[in-house]
Image (cartoon, rainbow, N blue to C red):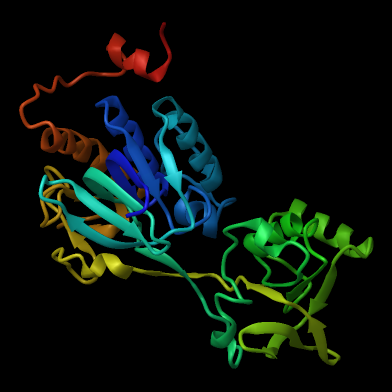
Length: 342
């Protein structure tokens, strides 16, 4: 078996609720490792609307989605959580000693005393663009995420899309690429203005190409891409490329979690409102992935669920241990854990 990563709690999903779970569990001396299918923490807040203001976070009249994620990352830093990104959890089994063994789509193995599912609406799946025959190139020449930048060094790269992911990877991969071209259906973008300005500056300096249009076909053999056909306002052009990164957005699916034997309710995971435990002891679900009567899909509701879940998870892991409820405002021991007192 490959190397095993062991932790107290394995948190599936690194969105705001998953991140706050690290804080509440850390106060109870439980170490967390988080797995997310995206390439960074933040979940849909960071991926879909990082600059969108949120108005219902207590004490913050307005905070951007990315700002909230940044603050949560700062808040959990004292607990030293570890992360595995760009991975989907594919398998789960309970071992004879009661611990859980989890595997990913890349073959990594994790063992934990308890599982917290904080996967939002499910795992994010990239949308496949409507390009004939694209399936033949997927995983060889066409990729929907960047797991290792070095894999794209000295390639002719074609990036398709107009959002933050497309612009970010255009800027990040440009220094590595032999040639890089960005294709978008119009000259307006849904990305951070600074990124757009930097992209246009590179284009003016002839360091990247930019084409308005849509990819209508691919050329190549045996999964190796050679060129893409782009249909634009002035006809079709053929763009040489050996790697293509389409960023057409994401869809949410429950994914392999649906096959874990948990009770489901309309593709969500029912929990009790005392422990937020699923039908399987030791597996908890918080945030938008769970369901119970009166459920509200709000970040602040997820934060409340996490606080109760953490207490239950501690009792599950340490059934004979006396747990003393403490307030961070008055507990010196908690303040030491947070690094606010010596």
